[in-house]
Amino acid sequence: MSAEKNSVGSAGTIENQNKMEYRDFWIRLLAWFIDALLLSFITWGFVNVIYYIGFWTWRGQTLGQMVIKNQVVRVDGKPVDLRTATLRFLGYILCFLTLGIGFLMILWDDQKQGLHDKIAKTYVIRAPGQ
Image (cartoon, rainbow, N blue to C red; front, side, top):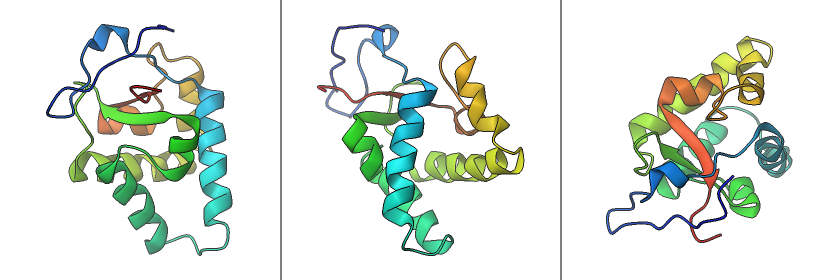
């Protein structure tokens, strides 16, 4: 994992893509757990769809990912757009339907991608400047 910092270009593109630090399963699980705790008082459903898709589109990070300093980016290093965030959320549903195997793929994938990341063509990296 690279110690060098990635910089964000004027269009929000991650520069030095070869030096992106892919985030592993455990740190991503911790971010998800923080998000799950925050949402435990809210019914799973439409609010969660808005939460995940909204935050990924707005900042590339949910609140839990902000705390852990993770960021979701497209494989080309550009920020996540509405289409990508929606595909990623649908991928989350598929991961649950595979009894979590889609999430466990992060453990053995070279770029630490789960099924949802592969579907949406995203990476989870250390947030630039963190």
